[in-house]
Image (tube, rainbow, N blue to C red):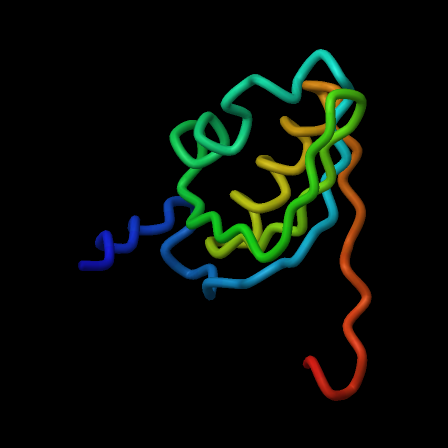
Length: 95
């Protein structure tokens, strides 16, 4: 049974948006529940699309859904935590 979607906060006039990002974790954050915190600190639905984790680096492709202001705040928070966040460039077939 799928979990219910969280209601996006932010302006009630903001249309929900979706953003895909590549996240690169430094070694000190690999064992931390960063994505769990992201989903609880911000009104965002997180969806892990792909991941590769070793002892020295974690690389995760994540999809974020929510108000654009919440996505921007969440990405700022990730970067403040030390996670590199870069947008995923989609090909014409994927978009």
